[in-house]
Structure formats: structure tokens, C-alpha cells
Length: 503
Ligand SMILES: Nc1ncnc2c1ncn2[C@@H]1O[C@H](COP(=O)(O)OP(=O)(O)OP(=O)(O)O)[C@@H](O)[C@H]1O
Ligand SMILES: [Mg+2]
Image 1 (cartoon, rainbow, N blue to C red):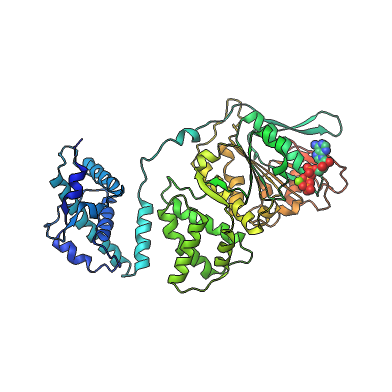
Image 2: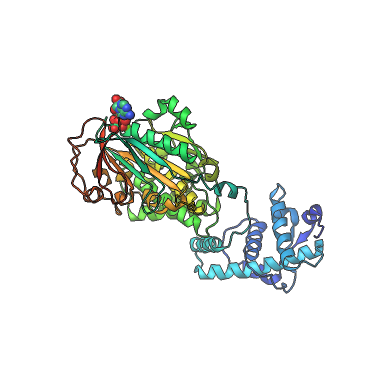
């Protein structure tokens, strides 16, 4: 490995070619300082797979190393990138300060050419130019990086069957049990029934059993009045931390981005979907367009994004484009009154722990948004996890439990995140439990959530049974005549409807 003295580099002079200086004039990027365009050009050239050809001369304007690279820490990053690039391509050449000057000159010269091509492709328009740069960055492979988290992602879960006891069969007093992690059906549970019929307590019972047998971490979301926050015994038994949003922020980096090359675009798209669905009145197409454009630089270039940063980016865009304050701005202004989340933990670390998250005092908009973001973050996290491999008996280890109480608002919003979780992640060992009052809550979704339910549990309700439920029960059940503590369910695939005494 070459030895190179950082101080000497910072004191040395660097320049590009005369030609590059001339061409740079065509780029109307509004940079004030010489180093800004130089860094952009060098960075642009470093993104190419091959090594630059030599620049024709070194007669461009000079700049000192400490101005070109800065001197508050970032210079080391630049030098490290350049040295790595050099050693990749010319491993046998001794890197001296002179050769380092050549290296800069060649990258700088080529970078200006490449930027000029981008600029012309963007028809000399600044925003389109930025867009092209961003898209190109998104296409770069992101090899290497920090593997610390992979170990956590690779937790395989516990082998063996997970049997949940719902109660006793009504007719013969045997235990009514369901195998969550068998093959050929979804490991998801829907609990339905009118107010006070026993959904919450039944769901908690099932959740505790699932956690005990599988060892999988849980997320328990209470989208109702926040009553679960008061259950200290429950938190102890589940070994969970209780968060009362918005008094306490969810310590999760909601927009965590790695690996997939087009990830940032997807994360921004999902955020826009969530924001739109959380708003009290639906925004128009123009507003949605502005929203995406305003947040692109933030989502593509930044990590650990917060709501105040989102507000700032929206404000800047609105003022630059002379847009009037509208419902989007009003909504983000409302949202930043509370700290809904703080990007403290990566999803890998957050989803390893047990959480009870309640929204007792949250506004409807912030409750919805936080719920949606959490669900999207879980979806992205699970996408990165490997499949949960079947054990010798064909049981799939459970690796994550998600339970949502008072799920009506989430079901009704038709948010794609929830259907992603229900449809896509059973192979990753995700089990979802949803409690809401009526089977009607499931109706109207673009894809029918009920079709992704393996175990329906219906307590007393006056609502009618929808078609999908009739198919599951192979009957037209009557829920309105059920006594307190009694529910209807189907305990095995293709099985018959069973009456169960839950308590
Ligand atoms: N396992 C049980 N054992 C004894 N009683 C129970 C059990 N489950 C529910 N109950 C009774 O039913 C009441 C309501 O239960 P729970 O809060 O679970 O209903 P819910 O359907 O979630 O109601 P809501 O729609 O108001 O949230 C409890 O206060 C209790 O009296
Ligand atoms: Mg309840």
C-alpha cells in the first residue's frame, strides 16, 4: 500500500486542464467558489467504472489542497476515496504527491466532460440536471458497506410448531388450537366483534403464546384510545417497552435506505403515499408532484431524515417555485408540533426489540402517519431479511410478530403497506394479528385483506359476514346471536366452522 502524507496533499496545488476550465463556463450551476464545481466533477468521474485518461495539460486555474478538499474532516474522506480508486486501478504504482496531483487533474478533466454531457442532456435546465445526477447515483452499485447488521438479519427463528390456544370447543370441551406456522395458508389472524366482545384480550393472549413459543420480537400497535399503555403487567410479561406517541417519539430511522439500487425512490414514493393518506383532505395531482420533487434531494442524499427536515425542504421548494401555502404545508406544520419519531435506531436494531406503541393523545393525522411509516419501515426491513427456512416437519419459524388493535383506520385507509405485510412476508416468518370491530372494516380494499387471513375469529357483531368470510367458514355464519366470550372460527385448512368458548 502506498504511503501518502495528508499534510503535503493539503498544502499542494491542484488544477485541471485549460480545456476543462473553458468548458466549465458552459455549466451554469451558480457555484460561488472554485472548489464546488471541482468537487462535483471529481466525484462524477470517480463514479465511473474505469480509470480516466490523462488530461491534455495542467493549465487550469490552481487551487490549494485544503480548499479543494476542505480541512474540517471531510478532506480525509476525499483522499481515502481517491487513494482507493487509484489502488484499484493501478495497484503496483507508488502513489506520490505528484501522482496524486495527476490523479486529481485527470478525474477533474473527465468529470467536467461528463457533467457537460449531463447538462446538455438536461437541456441546460438546473432541476433536470440535478435529477439526472440523482438518478445516476441511484444506479450505482453499493457494494461493501457495514455488515454489522447482517448478523441480526440472519436470526433464523426457532424451529418447531407454534400452536395457539383460542379457548375450548363449544361442543366437546377440547382445546381449540390453531397451528400458526403450518404450510399452505397465511399465518395471519383477524379478530372481529363489537365493542366489549373480547377482541383485545383474546389477541393479547394469542400474542403472548406466539411470543413464548417462537421467541420472535413483537410490535403491538394500539391505534385506539391508548388503553394498552396502562397495562404495565402486560409490558412486563411481553418484555416490551411502552411508547406513548406523541409524548414519546418512536426511536426508529423510518426512511432507512440501503442495498437495493432504487431504494431511495421507493422509500420516497411510499412516504408520499403515507402522507397523502394521513392528510385530512386529499391533495391534488400538482401538489403530489411538487411534494415528490421537493423531497427528492433530501431522500436521495441524506440519511436519518426527520420531519423538521422534510418541512424545511418543502418550504424551500414552495418559496423557490412561488407556490402558495396549501394543505400539504398546513399538514406538515401540524405534524412537526410533535416529535413522532427520532431516527435513533436502524430497523435491524429496532425490530429486534419488543414494543407496545400507543397513540392515546395523538391527532388523527399524526397517528395515521406514524402507523403507516412504521408499517412501511417493517416492510422494507423484511424485504432485506432472508427467507425463513422450513424445519424438517415443514414448520416455518416465526421471526416477527405484529399485532394491531383497533385496526379499523388502517384497514380503511387502503394503505399499500399493510397489504404488503399481509401478502409478501409470510415466507420471512412474519405473523400479523388484526383486531377491529366489524368484518366490514375489511371490505373495499383494493386487494381483499381477508384473503390473507389464515385464522378468522369472530365474536358477537350485528354486521353481516362478507363473501370472503363465508367462503372461509363454508357457511353463512350469524354472529349476532353469539353469547359473550363465544366466537366462531375455522381451525384447519378446508375445515368446518367451529364454535369456540374463548372465555
Ligand atoms: N379472556 C377473558 N376472560 C374474562 N373476561 C374477558 C376476557 N376477555 C374479555 N373479557 C371481558 O370482556 C370485556 C371486554 O374485553 P376486551 O376489552 O378484550 O373487548 P374488545 O372487544 O377489545 O372491546 P373494545 O371494542 O371496547 O376494545 C373485558 O372487560 C372483560 O370483562
Ligand atoms: Mg379492544
